[in-house]
Length: 495
Image (tube, rainbow, N blue to C red):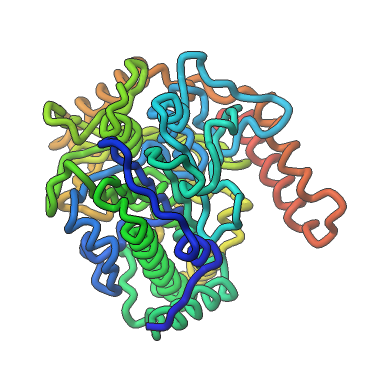
């Protein structure tokens, strides 16, 4: 294997100071890649090998049924950094509060790094690859004080001070949106491992056709998984080199599933199911947990591991506690993503997935400047127009949706057979419907009444600023204008 390093990791592994823990409080390190499902060897992926995440699982606990409460970056991050459902704190709309109208947290809610700071921890957040001194990805949908982070590297802490560090990585975003991005990550894989993932290794979900672009995109995605795994190994190596690994809890989790047509932004398993692996002091090696957990739980378990009291207001649970009572279900929500307005909620139990579409008159593939820029969406539309899709692959192109969807996830792992209309499942449907209704009321779901139009207009005005004096982005600007007009038209029509 060639000795390949991104700039930030080279900085991390060279010339760093070695610290010994001055007390028994463990360090906490979160590694959070973007846009990546559980395509790791320890989760059953066979097309590639991921030795570093696998080794982390061997040293600790692997959760096989972890789900995000929001399948898109900013809403997901707003949730896990507070230990709260994004819907409970008004942060459910992706990239909201970026314009003149701002979102403010309830006064009692504190960010997780602030709670660590108050307990004497050094707090840092950095990116990979990154630049010295530059903070990593935050992307929160509310106003927050940047002083909750002491810096971009735990090396800046005081001698003996425990640290809470986040490493935010591009993950699946490394593959880009088209052939140029695919080639870039696959070339990096060749330089690092001596090979790229061949197209012949790709096994697509049944609702995606074997279009050459979709296959190559997935191969490039798998190489982004390999590169992410490589980064995990370098982080662990640094901790070991500094002599702090044995007193550090390392947590690996992605922010949501793969960015694809039916993945990111949707509440099917491809969008919500994520890997969650935790290793460190006090965690029994080789443990596998198959109970349903939510990604916000990392807030509570991290605080508890550091001996910090988990606040009563926090909805996250310490899933590593000896007296933890497993959840009956995980709840997820999708609301507006950029300019595209949607409103979906789901309940995921061990055996079933229930989804409610509050805007059933809208198509699955609504116009989205972000998603429509991807070559895989172009490929899907080309083959749909050419009549090359089978019935399962046509599911994405339905012009409307059922109000309710129910899937037997054990027997239908890809969620293609909707059982909501089957009388044999009426009791299960009724139970999950009631469970969702109760959750929305108990957690004060802010999305039930829809978004304030003034907030939407404020955020759209902020988006348009990036097009000012940039003629090369004129087509993007026109696309966004068309999409916004269509969203408002559908809203006026009751859709």
